[in-house]
Image 1 (spheres, rainbow, N blue to C red):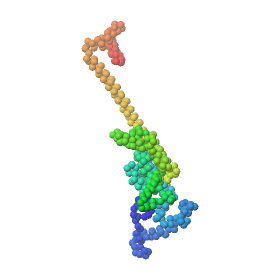
Image 2: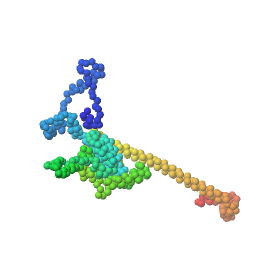
Image 3: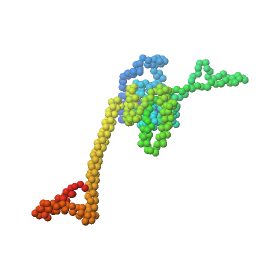
Image 4: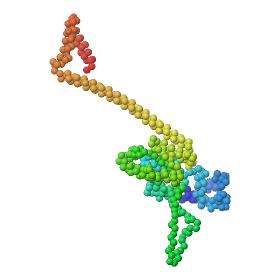
Length: 409
C-alpha cells in the first residue's frame, strides 16, 4: 500500500485471503491455490546487489555507517523509488512547449506525450496555482509531463516554478525583541525577509519554443477555423507578442535561460511538417541517451518512422498516378470537345452560305454563279469545235462546279 500511495494515484490494495492452516479442510480450488502460494514462497532466489549498493559511498553517511533505510522501507519509500528509477534508467521527462498561436505547439505536445507516454497538460494564465499542484502529483513526479504553455510569458512561468522561502536570521539577531519597560515604546519587530527560489521538483528538464512568422500562423489559423475568426487570432497574437516578442520585455524563454538555467530549443515551423518538427524535438530530448521508461527501442522507433515514410511516399505516388490518369482523361475529353466545336463551326458556316444563296434573287444568283462558267464554256466550245457540243459543255460545267467547290471560301 505504501508503494502504491507513493508511486501512483492512490487506491486500496486488495488483501490476500488468509489461508487455512495446513491440515484443515478446504475445497479443491482453495487447496490448489494454497499449494501454488506455498511453492512460490519456498523459492530460493539469489539476490545480487545493484550498482548503487556496490558504490563505495553507499550508506557511508548514515548513522551508524552501513545502515540504509534503518527506519524501514515504508518511511523511506521515496528514496527507494528514486534509487529504483535510477537503476532502471527511468527518467521523468518534464517538457514545456511554448510558441505563438497556430505555430504547431499543441500538435507537437500531443505527439511528445504519446511517444514518451507521459500526461499532457495545458497552461492558462488564470490557473497557475492549480497547475503547480498538478505538476507535483505522483504521476508527474516519476513519469514527467508535457506542458502546453499556450500564450503565457515570463510572469506566469515565474509564478508557476518559483516560490517564497523565509531567509534565516543572522547569528545574534533576535527573533523577538525584548519587552518594553514602563514608559518606553516597544521596539519594532524586524520584518521577515523572503526570497524566491526555483522549484526543482517540477521545473521542466526540456524547454521547446516553436517559431513562426505572423503570416504563416494566421494562414493556418484561418484554414482551420475559418475567416470569421481573424479577430480572435489578432487578439491572441497580440497577447503572445506583448509577453514574448517585444524588445525590452523578458520572455518565457528568458526565464528558463537566465533564472532556471535550462537550455531552450527553438523549432522553426516554416517549411516543416508535423513529423519533422516532432523528430527534431525527439532527438533533442534524447541527446543524452534514450530513457528506458518501458518505451519502444530505437530500432522499433526507426522501423515505425520508415513505415510511416513509406506509407507517405506510396500515398503521394498513388495521388500522382490518379492525377495523371485523370489528366489523360481530361485531355482526351478536351480534344473531343475541340473536334466537335470545329465540326459545328463548319456546319454552321455551310448552313449560313446556303441561307445566303436561298435569299439571293434568281437573276443575281445566275449572274454570280452560272453565267461566268457558262460563258467560259461556250467560248471553249467555239475554240475546240467538238463533235457533240452539248456533251462537251455539260462536262465542262461539271468540272467548273467541282473546282469551285474545292476552292476555300
